[in-house]
Length: 346
Ligand SMILES: Cc1cc2nc3c(=O)[nH]c(=O)nc-3n(C[C@H](O)[C@H](O)[C@H](O)COP(=O)(O)OP(=O)(O)OC[C@H]3O[C@@H](n4cnc5c(N)ncnc54)[C@H](O)[C@@H]3O)c2cc1C
Ligand code: FES
Image (cartoon, rainbow, N blue to C red):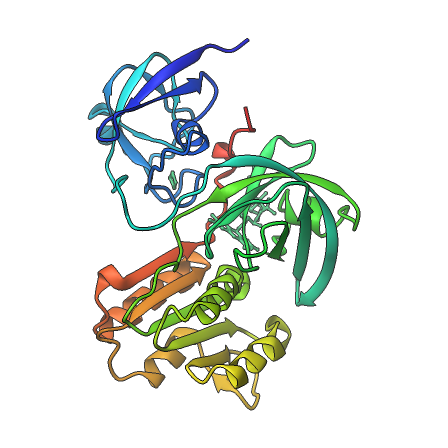
């Protein structure tokens, strides 16, 4: 049996029990002690914490996220580091009350009820959970890839009012374990799957005065679809702009769904954009289309999701249009570094 360590989170005065093979972040979220995090796979650095007392195992924490100097200074990645002794840690990011409800991380079982091709190399996967999962619009779950002991992140596209039926949009990665090796090959309707969630801090849950620009590349549309549905249902933003970028018409999906929302809500605007095929809609890279539509983004907020290069380009474009950096929120669909594949659920 693995040893249990006690980890004190400075500033929260919380002591949590952590298994020796369990990450500090995983244990904290399961104990409903919120710690800042984004990717849970060692690529973003949002979960950095200072180890004030005790020893951790850094496993394969990548050098580009946690430098040798940072390790020497006692920093660790909460999503990867596991305890080697009792610990006292202090999160670097804001772990206090951020005005957002947080829900505990839990393991779930569910049944695949829909698996359909919705765009080029893109599938909609709907899972009916045995027990409901509370989450915020914009968060994601980790699907456990059968027989591989690894997890992959997929954002919920359904609104948080639907706690039993989770919708995911999955893009094929050629040679990828979860997509090529499972969701696009052996997965069938009726299959039982395991997942854990909710995770992430990319969300829009409270009423805000600023109009919001949502920009998604490919399946980066998934969390934005959840956000759009909740924001419209609860009237969270004065004006909402959704941009979805693809190369060709076959890359777009749910076009009619969003056009229908546009007809129903006058303050919702939907702008799909294609970069490589002529059509009767917006043309060009989605970030260029946004730049063309707004001479200034001052006083607006943005929610960006998709491949890291698209998210970076969008951040630059919005800053050029004078959007305040603190109002730019992002979720990058970074590929799991093979060596740091997320540890299995303890
Ligand atoms: C927070 C977050 C949310 C996400 N949400 C979504 C979402 O809603 N929809 C979505 O489609 N994606 C999403 N992703 C991306 C998703 O989690 C996966 O990364 C993606 O589906 C690829 O997983 P895979 O297992 O198929 O590929 P992987 O097995 O991770 O492979 C990725 C690439 O690395 C290569 N590779 C793998 N192993 C090796 C090796 N040993 N040596 C060299 N190369 C190797 C593969 O050939 C492939 O090209 C999200 C990612 C994050 C971080
Ligand atoms: S959440 Fe740990 S590195 Fe991203």
